[in-house]
Image (cartoon, rainbow, N blue to C red; front, side, top):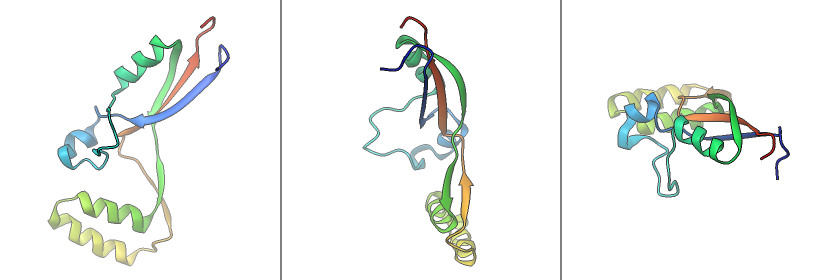
Length: 116
């Protein structure tokens, strides 16, 4: 449905980055609803096979309230780090918004190939 030369932007998890490797089974995006996990090479290949040229890949940044972000972070950290993080979170304004990016979510920008 996209015209030749049209731009497709999508974001998805990238399993082949430092954060999932570091977190292992505690990586917060490991959940039953995710049937497949991709890396940059697989996404690039899927796009190419379907008539798209990968133009750019960059980290995707979420914006979250500090209370939510720090609570989530304290839940995946080892206990000795999680407890101090909870205390720090209690001191910060919960409504402030901060950027959050661990490099495990990527924004893929692709262009529909001419004549596809």
